Structure formats: structure tokens, C-alpha cells
Image (tube, rainbow, N blue to C red):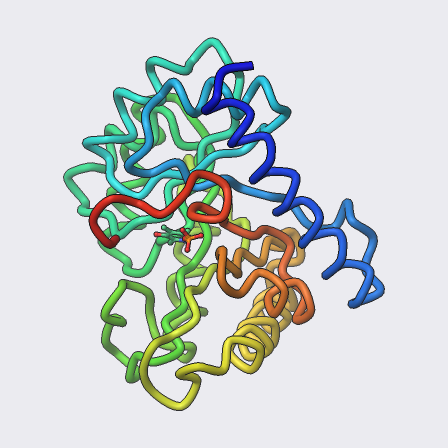
Length: 239
Ligand SMILES: *Cc1c(COP(=O)(O)O)cnc(C)c1O
């Protein structure tokens, strides 16, 4: 193995151990939690190593970077997730490679993704991004909408052609009443997820938890954790 590949293998094993321990502590079967490796800022060669090491799901947060990377890795048969703030004019590009978009947070984006998916003859999974620090009617600083605004966007996704409502996503907020309390934030997300499932039973994805707080997310009930730094290393330039 190359140095880089063995480093990724070690990091991956460490993350796998953390996920397994968190599942045991929560009394949850390991299969209930899917690891999504966030490969943003890292090259396609790393995605290829990760695939050789057994990773099946990867995520990106900028279309300019993700589109060429996904094209270069098309032969790997990976599932691609889009987790970044998304401009409506990027919808056409994103639906070509993304199996799921975790950052759907406004009606205009729902329409843009829907027309793009129909045009591309694709079905795009959508998660409603919740910002637990956003006031009702406005978006959070890292995207996402206030809990009260979730049902309207979820209903629009469910009704839109070419889209499938998969669930909810959040990033633990840095400000507001949940600052430095990821466990409470993720428990609040679970309540929102359960309420959503009452009207949309198939929307059972709960995407929460990153390198620093995946244990809290798994304890709360997350089905998908999005891990970058702990697998690939600290990104050059903070983002
Ligand atoms: C970058 C990113 C992650 C991964 O964060 P790490 O702290 O590097 O694990 C997860 N979710 C989103 C939305 C991201 O942008």
C-alpha cells in the first residue's frame, strides 16, 4: 500500500471503531448507522483509495469541486451525497452525480432540483436541512431552515417530480441555545425527524454528526454520520 492509502486505512479503522463503540453504548445495531466520508478539498485519488478500502458513500459540499471529482470516479459505483449550501443555478449539475442532497432548505431550491432531475431523468433524494439556531422564516448561517419551516419544504419535496423525500440533516449549531450542546441539538433533530415521519413514513434518514460529535449523533439516533477530518486529515484552509 502507498503511504497515503495506509494512512487512510488507519484513520478509517479508527472511525469505524468509534462508530461501533457508539452503537454499542446506545444499544443500537452497527448496521443502523451509515458512514459517509466527506472528501471535500481532497483529490479523486483519495476517493479511489477509500473505495478500495471499502467506503461506499462519499460527500462533497461544492459543485465546482464535486462535479469533476465524481466524473473522474464514475467507475467506482459510489453513492454521492451533496452536503453544502446550494445555489439554484447549480441544481442541473448536482443532480447528474448526487444520489442525495442533504442541504435542501427553501422552496425555490426544491423547484430547481425538481426540474433538473426530471430533465436528467434522475430521481434525487432530498433531506431537509434544519438550522437549530435559525429564527422562524429565515436561514441559518450555514444554511438550513428553522424547525417550524420544515413541514412546508418537506411537503413540497414529497410532491415534486423527480425528487424523493429521504429525511432531515443538521450541523450542530455554534450559536444559540444549542451551542456546545450537540447531544441536545441532535435529540431535537430526532423529534423533528419523528414528526416528519408521521406524515412521510419513508423519510427515515437522519443525517447528523461529524468528526467531533459523531458519538452524540449516534446516541441520539442518527442513521448517517458525515465524517471528513477524522478520515482524511485536517483540511488546508478552514471550511
Ligand atoms: C465538512 C462537512 C462535514 C465533515 O466535517 P468534519 O468535521 O471534517 O468531519 C460534515 N457535514 C458537512 C455539511 C460539512 O460541510
